[in-house]
Image (cartoon, rainbow, N blue to C red; front, side, top):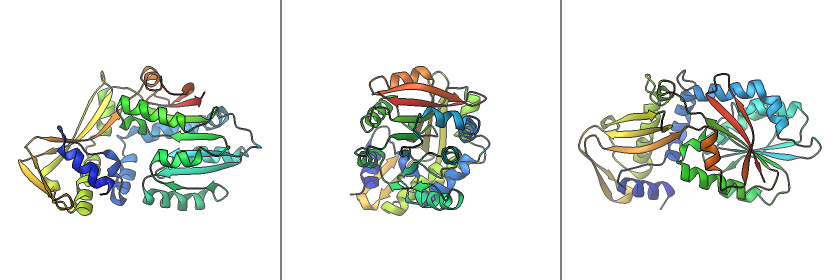
Length: 314
């Protein structure tokens, strides 16, 4: 049984129903997410790119790397690498000996990134790796090369606080003392800024989330009628968590042939598909409190919408 098959069965058998956001990213999902990152409402990409554009030299300098000693720049969830290229150009301009190791669950994303880097940064040594973060990181942990791990775009925010704490603990365990992490986190801010990023009027986010059902139809031979589900999003500043759902518009039943099961949905019933946790210093300190990582520095955009934290493995 595939991971998708197992996770769909578990998630749709749960109360309330849920599906993992990691399955958003098939070939179609990757393309739609590129559109999301270009939406005017989706401030996250521009905010983090702004941080790198203004502070690239200081950020790279904060890694405290020896220009004579090769190091690995490892990126978790690299995607198209558009923001990372700003840092990569600074690294190359500063004459560091770096190997860029983008890690992503999506073959499509890695293939596209490898091609674009070959064209834009031909002198960069690139060693892409496909798979789950920690299975790949553990294979790199035996190397004595210093590491800087990039975990950008507020991807940590797709986990609840307990999951994020466990993730950061695991991340620390796969690093050596002195290794660094550059962690990008969306900051807690008013509903009027946050919610449109997850519920845009053009319906691009809705299309992205509904594509998850299309993928299940294709790969698990299911019969979800996408017209009978709608995207919903919620956010409260007090909690600091945006949530996305797929809501059944009618009473309906869906058959998933690969599972040989039928799942029933009541009108108004929601499938939880994603959380987007927003951070501040206190939330992050709580999340990493049991890990071997400590906050060394913080870089913010001009509106303080987003922050990139430099963490160090003790």
